Image (tube, rainbow, N blue to C red; front, side, top):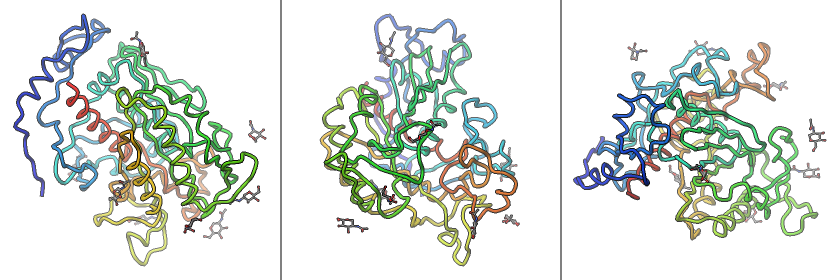
Length: 407
Ligand SMILES: *[C@@H]1O[C@H](CO)[C@@H](O)[C@H](O)[C@H]1NC(C)=O
Ligand SMILES: *[C@@H]1O[C@H](CO)[C@@H](O)[C@H](O)[C@H]1NC(C)=O
Ligand SMILES: *[C@@H]1O[C@H](CO)[C@@H](O)[C@H](O)[C@H]1NC(C)=O
Ligand SMILES: *[C@@H]1O[C@H](CO)[C@@H](O)[C@H](O)[C@H]1NC(C)=O
Ligand SMILES: *[C@@H]1O[C@H](CO)[C@@H](O)[C@H](O)[C@H]1NC(C)=O
Ligand SMILES: *[C@@H]1O[C@H](CO)[C@@H](O)[C@H](O)[C@H]1NC(C)=O
Ligand SMILES: *[C@@H]1O[C@H](CO)[C@@H](O)[C@H](O)[C@H]1NC(C)=O
Ligand SMILES: *[C@@H]1O[C@H](CO)[C@@H](O)[C@H](O)[C@H]1NC(C)=O
């Protein structure tokens, strides 16, 4: 059952309260500002963040272990139709999904509570900073989720914009001089699929020892979140170059993934300043392609699923060799890279995928395609609002603990 211990550390709160960020900053408490004052008057105010006791995650609580609880009072955290930045791949209800129950679940860790997501606190933590999601379309979903989570709280006076600077997408909030970015790199390292829109899906060639071109664009980013998985899993083997740039080789995916991650790890060690930069690696987002895994005897996929599974299981789509590789490589790094281990928690959520209410090749499914769910259901991508919001809530929770620790 839930074990809830309040930390007996009053000085923690006090520190958070008295801290002021920089010279000349208005000492206005966040709550006061939000409730009583017009935002426009405080465009340059730097606001110390109060971290309350309820928001503290006690040491030793694994926030990735827990269960989903029904909470239609507080969830979703934003409305699908109110976020203008969602691409149509994720807007399942607008695309015709008849149920929206998948929007109403809250992740409840076993040993503690997650702090409630507070977008204003996050904006304050991101002031003068860049946060960048790097990876494939799963990461793009997390990026959009983050943009929507923040959009709803940014004061209406604040200028915000989203720009495509391929392979980046940049959401900029001028009032905070902050940017939330997405960088398309489906294999993290370089590949022939790096063009933001014109990338082959069936032909894949990864350059296992090249990351410099991407690395240039990641340099100096304050918070980086990496993810790469599904693009590797097309076939058991993959075409690569390694060592010699013009000699094509075929490697098994397990080996190729490890070599790629080592290339990335070398970049991290040589390029990251661990004092000023934070690095996260997100584990694989699970797929729900085979309904027999959660409903023995059936032969479908995630189509028509409306509830999370009750029993925890790890689907065969989540490759444990790859998981082990991620763990090994990150453990050996000299730079602290934190793992956002979202695999198991998302594995419960067979109901959260776009199913037949998403896109294929940039177009919404036709009625004929929808009537053929065996061929056309997408059990990889997620509807928004939905599961990626939880990944961001956890990321937020961790950043908030960091912030408190640094006071
Ligand atoms: C929330 O869920 C409860 C239990 O399923 C239901 O009775 C109630 O009508 C729901 N409320 C809203 C606003 O949907
Ligand atoms: C805005 O943020 C960037 C970092 O993202 C920083 O280099 C720059 O100095 C900031 N500008 C101001 C006016 O603080
Ligand atoms: C997409 O890339 C391929 C191969 O690199 C190229 O032949 C084709 O002209 C490109 N298409 C567009 C629309 O740019
Ligand atoms: C590897 O490349 C060769 C030559 O381009 C191609 O024929 C083959 O289908 C590719 N294999 C895979 C697994 O993509
Ligand atoms: C992949 O290749 C490595 C080295 O060649 C080998 O040790 C490993 O067993 C292979 N894995 C699979 C799944 O074939
Ligand atoms: C979807 O599921 C519901 C109940 O679980 C069932 O009644 C309905 O026939 C299913 N729809 C299709 C198209 O399979
Ligand atoms: C993620 O958590 C699972 C348990 O849910 C564990 O087996 C796995 O090793 C963890 N992965 C990493 C990279 O820490
Ligand atoms: C649809 O799936 C069936 C088998 O379930 C297969 O025979 C058929 O070729 C598929 N059609 C398309 C367009 O993918």
